Image (cartoon, rainbow, N blue to C red):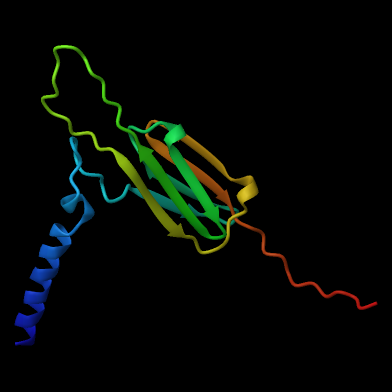
Length: 142
């Protein structure tokens, strides 16, 4: 009976997870729904973190990166660029429009003064130097 209950709960969860996503309930006027996220790779060495995010079809001006200690947020605004051409009508429009973002908690804090970001061929590459951990210091009492 426990197994049957688990299967029923899994089926209900799958149904409502698919049906209750924001992209299902709120459909765009045209184009596809926004993707839930974008693919990233995060690497680390002794000096810095490297994040590569796949963000094709965006302008670098529409991408923003926020750093707060060890928390990194990457976001973008995907703007609708409708072009009206006389005597033309859209037959199919699969591009999506809106905002998308992801946040990551890194294992250690980032030194935001030395960060570098490049965007080329749909790939955002962030180089985030680690904040140096200063050893404790004893002060003299005067």
